[in-house]
Image (cartoon, rainbow, N blue to C red; front, side, top):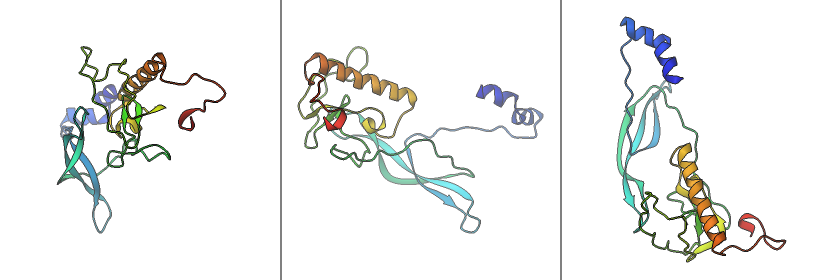
Length: 194
């Protein structure tokens, strides 16, 4: 629908008639917004200062994450749009990695605050980095799970959240099958309270 609107809209007619130059869209990855730049007199947006990032592995076996390099650049702009999203905040009683904005976890299982994540099993033929039947309870909070941005940090798209949820649900199912969770009953509290 968006493509149809652009192709049939007034801009398309202006480009076809030669009265409007063609527009170009460039994606620049590995950039982290730092500051919206403004004209000191008018206050109008003049650009966006970004920090170049690079993938770095925090610990052996964990996925690489984009970290700032300290190198800045300015992207000229007349308009800056903020995408929906946020940086996760700590949850009382749960460990939190403030530098990455997430709760440390292994396949959705929340790690204890002092835990070093156990090594991940090798990549499976399906391409998944963690096999759903991988049951390591070393250093995890029994019965406490995460998914979405609190699991991986503020990255990804809607489809990424779906894959995240499937990964966490596979861990829950494996823990239930493995007898690692208490059976439901009147003494079992829901969520983090349990």
